[in-house]
Amino acid sequence: MIVSKLKRMDYLFIAGILLFSGFGLIMVYSSSYTLGALEYNDGSHFFFRQLQWLLVGFLFFIPAALIPYKVYGKLSPVLVIVSLTLLVMVLIPGIGVERNNSQRWIAIGSFLFQPAEAVKLFMIIYFAYIFAKKQSYINQFSKAVLPPLLILAVTFLLIMQQPDLGSSMLILLSCGIIVLCSGTRPLHIFLLGGGAVLAFVFFAYTSPYRLERLTSFLNVFENVQSSGYQLVNSYVAIASGGLWGSGLGGSVQKLGFLPEAHTDFIMAVILEEVGVFGLVVVIIFYLFVMFRGFSIAKGLDDMFPKLLAFGLTFQIILQAAINLGAVSGMMPITGITLPFISYGGSSLLFTMISAGILVNLSSYRKKVAS
Image: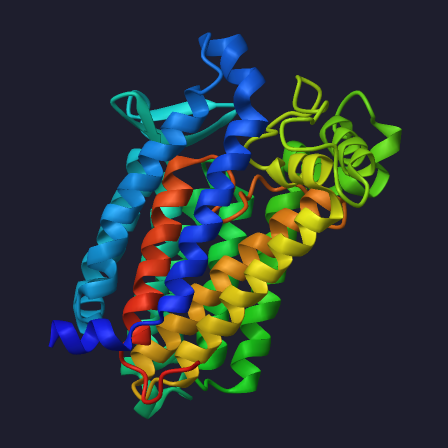
């Protein structure tokens, strides 16, 4: 059974993930060296922490790729309970860790764990499983669609208490894609989409801080020393890179000018050091992930793994699109990291698990894509 499963896995996808994770590790080292030297007297500080998380991610990647996918479905109710428990725990003083006016982390020794990253994955598993089970009455809104949406609403509200508008909207969009792919009525999709937009607008306009974060990219040069500071320095980095960049390690903006140079805005450093060529490579990689993920989903017969594959693929691509949009000034800055590349242990760990599950599902395809 295991041998047959191993033979049918998408090894091209595995190779792409390994290669790009290595690229991300190199860019974390380059973008964080100065900060590590200044704050920890060790330029390799963030590199080695990211390497540790990457190794842990690989350790979880392997069982995620081997466990029968039906186990994930059976565990989905437990994953919902774990999700809600973690989101409550992070809000408790003394357990949750506050940084930059947000309480999004739980300390585990010297590491910080971000529960929202786990919830992104757990909610996709739950939605894929529950909507696969409801196929016989998928058009009955009150019976099929509404119950999981209530759980999603509670999850959304808890994450907004941190506050983390970026993660909450990413979860809504990813789960919304699963609902769309499940075959529910177009009217229900329209109503759900309208509700999500209203929720987004409400939470944005009821907080001056969130509203400023979401609209600062529209008039960035009017607030160069305040809300527009990060984006303006991102523009400088991008403009400085040109076609081929200044060379690996040659970024000037990472020397204290560009905030979050190794996390949310690592793409600006890539553009400065590797140029447009680096952007093309990154976009090709995410297109590769999208193609392989959709190929895996289309090759599956059962609805649960099909929805799960679509949900996981869309979440990775949506996260990348949101991050790239923020760095380029085309979308609001929400704090969403770049999958497989940005520094961030929790994000990297659960992205690797998601990739492992996609590899797992690839072994159940009717035909193995070339």
